Length: 229
Image 1 (cartoon, rainbow, N blue to C red):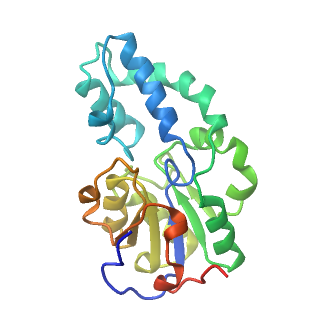
Image 2 (cartoon, rainbow, N blue to C red):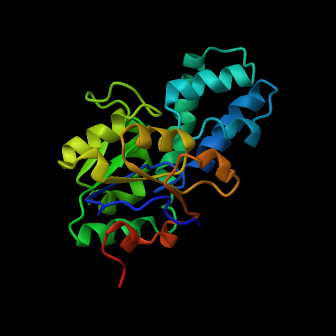
């Protein structure tokens, strides 16, 4: 964990990414992409994965098909992927410390939101085991929300979340596990806290305000948020 880059005023709202941050879905994405790659005699590894974490579905498909030189179109890739994902997502587990942090912020009346590159349908599958605590969020913004013009790394998802929370972007803090997500948060003029995969180099998060390895490491008081007792 590094220290906050600069002093910031008291944070008034917190926005969470979902995949790999609140829910442990990245392993599912990896498994399914490996299955598809192997069908065509290709190998999907970290060298490719590190470049797609946090991308929207279409952007991800474009990148994977090109990087693996798959003999299918990005649309066909997504069509093949959908049933494989839908079968696995309902079993997704929560990331360590995620539920506790969400409940803590809610108990202290801090406005909270989810800002995810997932579709609304995918969000429903992924949160199957976690409906109760996901119900604590004041708003959920997905990539296919009618108010969202572009997926991450564009700032639209986070700006929409801030607008619905009624909080100025500069008073919002975002937790993200991907460089694309951090880029989106900074483009929205928000404070960005990176919580990357342990295999991801810190250098990819040079634009984050702070890097931590686990949500439980986050110093709430440093950002004017109520600390855990």
